[in-house]
Length: 239
View 1 (cartoon, rainbow, N blue to C red):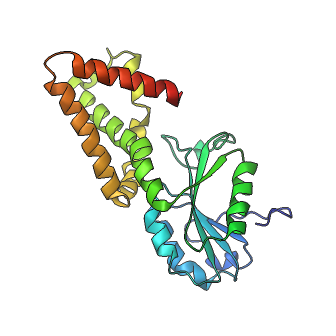
View 2 (cartoon, one colour; view 1 turned 90 degrees about the vertical axis):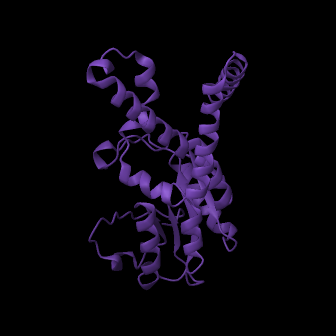
C-alpha cells in the first residue's frame, strides 16, 4: 500500500490464499501473536521483493526475533495499536477505534528509515499517534500498563464473584463495575500475550503482589496513606 497512490485493500481470513499477496506493498498481520509468527515464516514464498510487513500484536520481542530470519529483500517493523477493547470480532468494529490512541512501532536493527516513515504516515492517517521504541522496552513497559491491568482485573472479578455470589453482586456499587470493564476479555487471546511476555509479566505481577502484601501487613495507616496518595497522583497524570 503506497501512500503516494490510492491504496487497494484486501483482508485475508482463515483459509484465504496467500498468493493473493503477491502484489502487496504492505502486509499487516493481525492474528494472535503465535499465529502471526507462524505466518511470518511462510510469507516469503508469496511476497515480492521490497514488501513491508508489520503486525498488530500486543508483544513484540518474539515476532521481531522471528523477523530476523526473513530474506533481506523483505522488510519488517513491529507494530502495536494500543486501542484494544474488552470485546472482539468484526461486529465490534468502530470507525474511531484508533482515534488519538498510541500506535507503537518497533523497528529492528535493519529497519529502514523510509519504512518507518511510511508506517508513521499510515498510522497518522487513521488518527493514531505513532511512537517508536525497541521491542524489549515495549514488552517491559506494556507488562505494567496493559498486561498487568488485564490480569489484575480478571483475578479481582473472579475472587469477588466466587465469594459474593450472584446475589451479593446485585448489591455492588459502581466501583466494582467501573473497575472490572476488562473482565469480559477472552482468555485465549491473553494466554498468547502472557506466554510471549512471561518474564516481564511475572515481574509486574510480583510488584503488584508485593504492594498488596504491604497493605495486608500494615498495622497502622502509613503504608495505605502513602500508596493511596501515590495512586491518586499517578491517576491524575494518566487522565
